[in-house]
Structures are given as C-alpha cells and as structure tokens.
Length: 335
Image 1 (cartoon, rainbow, N blue to C red):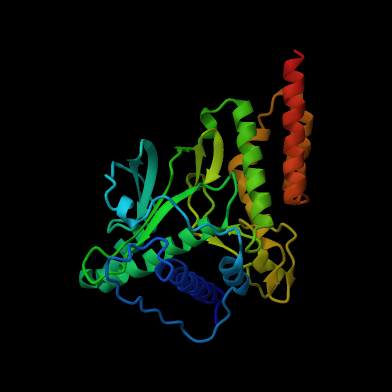
Image 2 (image 1 turned 60 degrees about the vertical axis):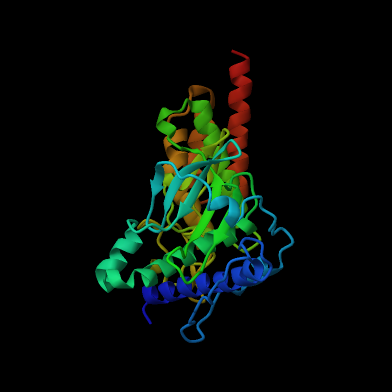
C-alpha cells in the first residue's frame, strides 16, 4: 500500500475512533446532546483491521483532565444568532456570535466549504448527506481534542452540539472563544517576541501532550488567533499524533529539506516535533528574530543558527526565547 494511501486510511480510522469515544462520552452520558430529542444511530464502518492510534484512544478515554461540564449545550447553541462568517476553511465555516454578552465563534460544516464542494462534484448533489458525514466527523475530532488539550495556548472550548437526527437539521456545532488574526507585520517587536514565546510554549506542550507528540498537519498562520493578548491555536481538526512513515531517510524531509530526521523501523523519529519547529521558524521565529533590535541581536542570531541546524528541542527553544525577552526588557529599562 502506498504511503499516501496508508496515511489517508490511518487518518480515517483516527476520526472513527474519536467518534466512537464521543458517542460514549456525549450521547450516552448526555453531556452535549439534548436527550429530549430522538437520534438515529451513526453508522460507521471500519475498513479492515489496520492499526489505529491506541495512545490517542486510551488517553482520551481515561485522562482525568477531560472536562465535560461546558455551559453551552444544544439548547443554547441552536438559539444563538449567527453573524457574518469570520473564516472559512477546507471543512467548516466559522461564524461570529454572542452569548451572555461574550463574543464567540461558532463552527459548523456548510455547503460551500472546499470538502463539500469537491464531494458534491464527485458524488452529485443528491448525495449531500454523505458528503457532510466525514466533514462532521472532523469537527467531532476537534471537539475531542479540545476536551483533552488544556493549555493557555489552545483556544478554549465553550460548548458543542452533536445532532444526528432523521430530519435535515443533522449537524455538529462547536463554540469557542473568538480572537483576532495573528499578523506579526503589524506588531511592534516586543509583541512579536511575545508571539514567538507563545508559539514555543505551545510546541513544547504538543511535544509532551497527554496523547503523545502532536504535529500540526496544516500549519499556517490562520490556524492561530490572538485572544486577550495571547496567541492560541484555534483550529485543531488537522492535528495528528501519527509520526511520518518512511522507507528511507529521504521520506523524512521537512519542506523539502533534510533536518537530520532518521528513518527507524519505518518511522521518521521525532518527525512531529521537528516539523512543528521548522514550520514555526519559517512563519514566526525567523521573521521576528531576523529583525531583532541591536540590544538582543547577538542572542537572536545564535537562536536562528540553532534553528537552521535543527539542534534545538522544544524546551531549549522556549528557554532561549525567554532569555532574549529578559535581556530585551532589562536593556530597555536601563536606556
């Protein structure tokens, strides 16, 4: 089986496992679903007996960190008035809304996102329900991850609603805190430095997360939001705990570059963590530290050299950035 096909199958199985767990946590315990409504069974077929991520399954099911007592349930969410869209991705559309005076974002699958448009072209408009099903599984995966990954640099889950009914209102909705896009070009350097530190803290948490080493599969700037002065990842449905599979070290390149990631027993060792650092370097670290003030230019240049050779782990990365921040603050205070 080709590597890309194996990866696709693993991701499908990954989502199916999440859905099974969510059914246990949410439907039977009534945490998110309005039990006064009737629901039909969600049909799921697992193709074959291929490997699924046992670490994710066991961590999600057993972790004491899981908090199922959110304030927003289907009753509240379905009565929220949706404002203009604030984002549209491959799987879902994000709408601005308010609840109890708080501005929030409501995410759901709509018929004009890329996945649905492509599916309708392939299957025909009469199969729209089957097109929606896999996209909704991805949102359910995001809900499960938001339940599990509690960190200051992960956007907060405020509530969710999972409907699987006979009528046409079948949908999955998730409510999260709303933030602003992260555009470092419009920030002063001290704020850029804080963004870099937030990113390093997040990558360190993802390296040591309760479900294993996490890679941000679709790593781009619009996956993040600035919320109350803190950068947080707000789109989690493309996170993965699967390390890159390989036949040789040439399969372990990151953005076409050899970062010294070895292929050991058909797995690229530490690929997830190193890939996160290198993409974050391209998007955030290099644009920030390559324009560092003279007060911290030497430290910043040393950091960029270490990043270019992939010689920093996540703990060293955040400690180096903290040191630069301390030096900058102390030097600025003495001027």
